[in-house]
Image (cartoon, helix red, strand yellow):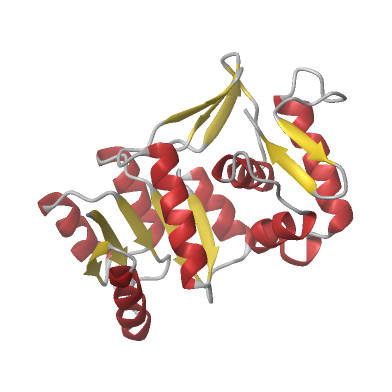
Length: 223
């Protein structure tokens, strides 16, 4: 059974989410704050951590730093702090995903499964041809050189990685990256960021082989 550590101090969220995750086949351990979370990590082994930014004691960013430094586990932030600073900080600390409250439980389960499928219980490297994505450090390189992806570019790349082989509509992509840039993300902005991402990861951006356009439907990552 997959073991999750839920670090959250809202009792109503803990109760509802724990019950739902149990029905989906996950074993959930709860910690309300930083001290309890670090103690749980020291005492038991987990496959993934669900982490709030605002905690009863300490903060999620500190917990995330400790998790990545000492355990290398995948981390998904679940938080009402959806401003760009918080999101960027989360990814810079190595978070594997960032979901704003309120969220749909079934979407969370899908993201958990995708991250575990891609990274395993200890995080790891994802290879996309010449491009290597380190989900622990939250970085992407091409032939050993840092691609210096922005937070939104990195999130967009993760969305494609988590849905490899699936056609994603522009509406689905907008919904997936909305919580990073808020009102600044619109259809034109999406076009710009896909263009920028292709310029960084594709050998020939005019004839992409990693992120392909599916005419009339959207985009698909096949590699």
